[in-house]
Image (cartoon, rainbow, N blue to C red; front, side, top):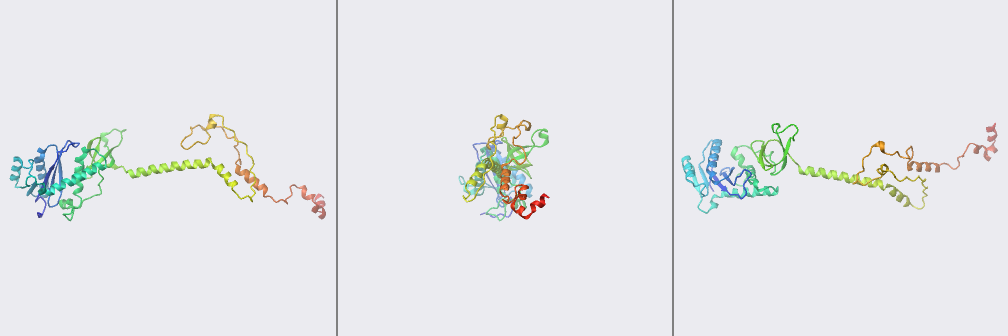
Length: 364
């Protein structure tokens, strides 16, 4: 194992591809640059292998300016994209040592090869989990690299991001790959009566507080998004279904309430005397369509709405027309004292009143 003391002392690189399915932007390769000391990884997507040299010069200018230092060594395989005359001349002029592997020995470039396998496995898992199209492999690779830099490794005591930048990574903005969301449409791109947001899928990160989303097979960079929470939506639908079920059950209980009351009276002990209920006039059968609308319907068959002015008035409308009040009045008459006189003349003509002289005194 090589010992390094700081960033840019050794950079590992590897080129993966070509992919059978090009990305949305038309890329077929991706190029990795890994700092050996911090394990910080950067990835570039390429349309052709010949772009390797230009991407390396871009990477070199970026990291040397960031760390105010120089790349000392570059480790790669013995492929033609790294051994071209133009590439070798540039490395010699820049003072960079080129450490190449032996032919057909990729294990000597183990850092970049291992990172290549790990990133492809993670990107494949993200695409398959969300059932997305394979042309999003480039976005999945970029997201896998973004997360890899913010996760601790076994070779270091900290995350690659913290070792590379000297700052603690902020993970509060992370959103799972492929999450459904709505992104805000700026006013300059819509009219007053057009929708303010559009549905999308989050497929990566770009800059500070920015997200890469896919909309109709196009990649857009947005800032304001609203994530769709599938769990809350499912719970809401379940609550609505439960309310409908309870409503139907209550209607069915009201419909069969008279039968339930009759069974309860018949099942009482034989010793108890239950007075007969007064007979009620039979309810006339509905003859007109308007009266048929008043018949109770099942829960799943809504009645046709009618105006109140067109509905017939109830024939038994009035006060105390319910069976409950008739029954209470009948019990009240049965509970009277049997010794109570029925009229005014009955106590005057009684034998006890005549014997005591009360009757004569009352008549005088």
